[in-house]
Amino acid sequence: MTDPMKIDRLTRRPQFLAAAKGVSQARGAVVVQQLDRQDGQPAIRLGFTATRKVGGAVVRNRCKRRLREAARLLAPLHGRPGCDYVFIARMGTADRDWDRLLDDVKSALTRLATPRAAPDMGDAAKSPARASDDSRPSGQDR
Image (cartoon, rainbow, N blue to C red; front, side):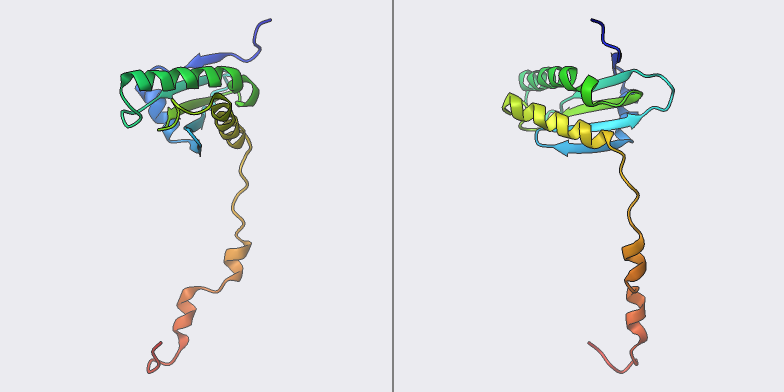
């Protein structure tokens, strides 16, 4: 059975930099960045990275392999078509229990897939401004 949702890879640096300008979620041992491309193409594109802070080359490669497998399993289920995702390994990615790593990736993807409501400005409108506290006579100090 073929997968109805096509998954491509991010390979060029400008693609990674563009995804960094989108929204991100940090969950446990992974950070996931998302950029809605709005180009009408339904494919999901995935990129993976690990900095030298994570460890040497062997550890970084292990982290990226684990993230690739987790994304292969979960991106078709929880990712949004037409979006780019960059998975960034953190310090515990290489040693994290597999089930917990899957939970981290799943929760980050589901959080990014749900649209966030605009902040409620009702609370800010109700609270008086701090500048109005200066209406005391000038001779009285706190």
